Length: 110
Image (cartoon, rainbow, N blue to C red; front, side, top):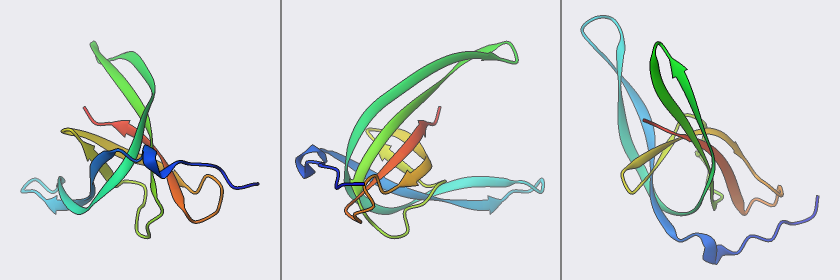
């Protein structure tokens, strides 16, 4: 595959990259606590919004594509927080295998 042209000028959004820490609770479960790892520049693209009904309640799943500079340690299960919206990272890959950028497919928490 040839090199993919991605303009670094597209990375206009400031995002807080966060990792989830599981803290045990009193009933034997765990509570998720988010901790900021870094503040990075990203490109954000909405991809889809799907409405569904679950247990008699209407809910929606909103997905986004987030592009950022390549960085080690970025993995599934982490999240970007942009303008108060938490985007959980579902997949991470290098779109042109050049080691320059990462493309993350994310699902909005909510």
